[in-house]
Image (cartoon, rainbow, N blue to C red; front, side, top):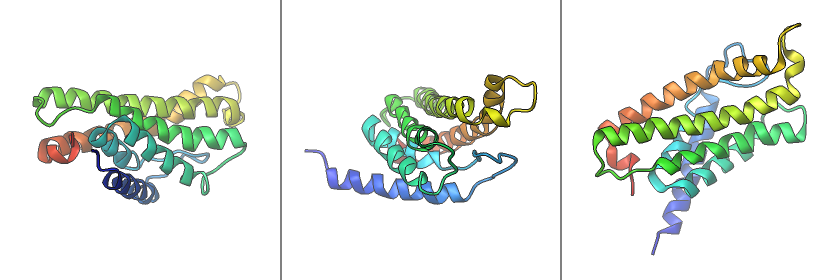
Length: 180
């Protein structure tokens, strides 16, 4: 039998940690949302450690709580930019791999999972940017191009930062990361 209380406790703790890490972020020039932080790390950790459902649930909790203090212009936009955007990070759990796998296979799984989670989050922000934030595009600039540039400007660093953290974790504490 699985240990549901332990798993739910881990999910709650990682969701709380993600929210705290989101407050410690680089806001940069992103006036209408977006920042570089380690908020995805606890979500990704649950996805790798406990699998797809734990990653999705952790991301959903994080995004749903962030909706209460996030920037919004429309109810669908806030849902896309928070609940959906952080839930889909949990899809990294598809790449959950055993601690017994070779170091190379673990690295490939980590990079693939972080990429998929980051890319799906980017897509959610991109759609929101095109539909609701296109009005902020410089005059004459294509709204789609604006949304790609704006959202990639923080999602690419988040992807790289998260990848480095997980490669280090996999090398120094593989049992923590690859909990199956």
